[in-house]
Image 1 (tube, rainbow, N blue to C red):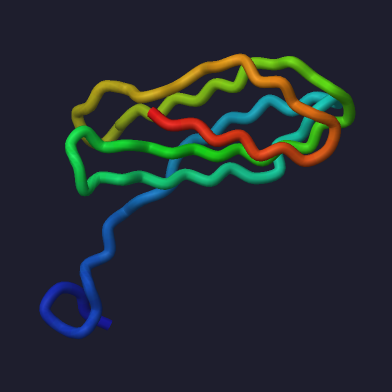
Image 2: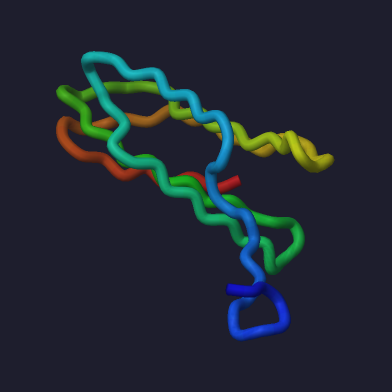
Amino acid sequence: MGFGRDFAPPLLATGIWDAVYAIDTDDITIQDVQTRPRVAKDPALLSVTVETNARRLLNARLRYELAGETFEAGSLGAERAVEFAPGVNRTPSKC
């Protein structure tokens, strides 16, 4: 399969492809992390949704950071206080 001038469009590298760190405790586990970049507009926007499973009502801080290693850019990130209800929680954030 070729890229560019034939039937296949060029593929851009998007998504998580490098180091990811998660801290897991007995009270809450991370089930899934979804990222969605929107680069068609300036400035670019990154949406992050974290799905967790809490064993009990829990107040915690949710923090993430995106930093480029293969390109020049400042880091993006967000941190906020979140109340996790018992069971599955989906927490969206944008930066």
